[in-house]
Image 1 (tube, rainbow, N blue to C red):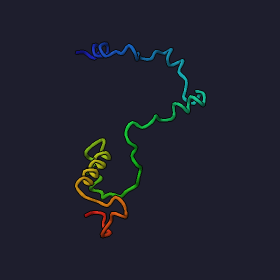
Image 2 (cartoon, rainbow, N blue to C red; image 1 turned 135 degrees about the vertical axis):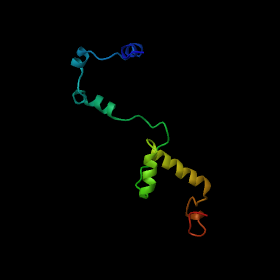
Image 3 (spheres, helix red, strand yellow; image 1 turned 120 degrees about the vertical axis):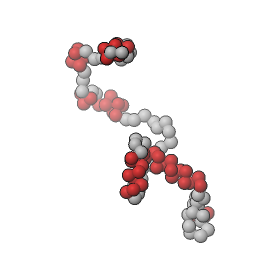
Image 4 (cartoon, rainbow, N blue to C red; image 1 turned 45 degrees about the horizontal axis):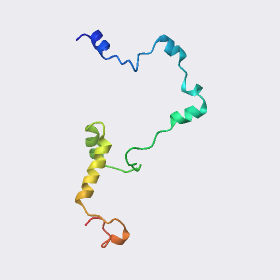
Amino acid sequence: MKAADLHQTSEDDGNPEWTTEDFARARSFTSLPGCLQAKLSTRGPQKAPVKERITMRLSPEVVARFRASGPGWQARIDAALKEWLETHHYAQNKEEETDGNHCR
C-alpha cells in the first residue's frame, strides 16, 4: 500500500485536518476568558485510587534495572512492593507490634 493510499484510508471525518482558515481563526490559550482557562486547566477526578507522592532513596542498581525495563517502571516498583507486602506480615499499627520489628 502506498503512503498516499494509507492517508486516504485513515482519514477521520470527525477530526479533519486543519485548513489555513482554521489556523487563522485559532486563538491562543491565554486569549481565552479566565473562567474558560480555569476550566480547561483543571484535571478531572481520578478514576483510579490516588497514589501518595513520596520521596524515597533507592540504590542506583535498583533504579537502573527498573528504568531499563521501559515506560511504567515506577508502576512496576509499586507492584513489586505490593507483592512483597503479600508475602511478608507487618504490623499495621503500633498496637500490633510485639517486638519493635515491623516484619515477622
